[in-house]
Amino acid sequence: MHKDTFIELRDETGSLAVIAPELGGWLLRYARPTRHGLVDALHYEQAVLERYPKEMWAGNPLLFPMVSFNHLPGKEHYYAWGGREFPLGQHGFARRSVWNVIGRGEAEVTLELTDSAATRAVYPFAFSHRVTYRLAGGRLQLEQTVENRSAEPMPFSTGIHPYFQVPLTAHSERNRCFVRIPACDQLAADVRYEQFASAPQPAQELPVARDVSGTMFLGGFGRRELTLVDPGSQLEIVLNWEASPQHRFCALWARTTDAPFYCLEPWTALPNSFTRAQPGELIELPPGQTFRAGMWMELREMT
Image (cartoon, rainbow, N blue to C red; front, top):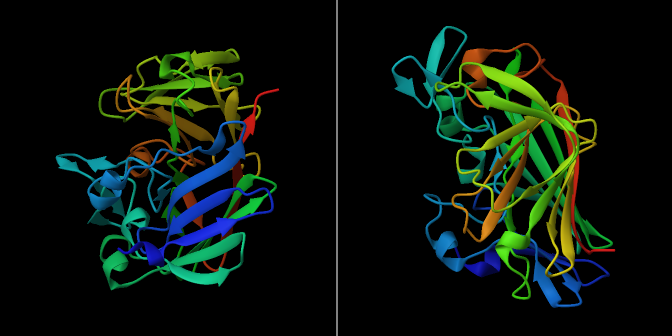
């Protein structure tokens, strides 16, 4: 895909966002002017872009109609619904689909993904999924709507997968960074992700150096906000999803303890949610109804 098909947003602060509609509505960059110059909040590598769709370890991919994975007995990456079984890959198909641009301004863009023969083969529902990215005052806002255009309830989970840059500048070191987490619950899965045990956790500052390659799952938030702090750069990234009450969970993940990224991922469900079918976790949207969510991220100077 040629770069002239990317969409670039700018606001009055000089902040920048770059979106690739034809690559899954992928947010490739969000950057803001700081004392260090223009700093990228999201990890981005041209090499990752060239490996799309096999690898997406950069930017912020969109997850729909399933976060994480689901399995059935003897079948990995399958789910069952309405007496039928369907294959569906990790994190769903939205991040590997072409999104249409249906609205655009200097500082915002609205994308839409609708069902097709390809999606209905693995997800037999008619839908409209819209995402708006908006820059305002240096903050990047994301608004999401999912409309069920089917004649029956539509099950799904959804979330985002931002790969935040660590450290944020060359003036710091990865191991000095940490995540500020409010009081919440930590959720531990059994080996087959068929049950989760919950344990309350006090507010904490979690070192980025801690190994989360197996994914740490959090829930039960009193406040849906995490902050990735880079003391060496005197910068931090706030991720807030208070306007997304159904995003009850957050997954923390980094491929290794020296990876140049660290992921904070608000989700509406945990892995294997179709098979576990816990009440209130898997969204079952009635016909004609619309799901709405809003969140924002902000790179800013530490005070």
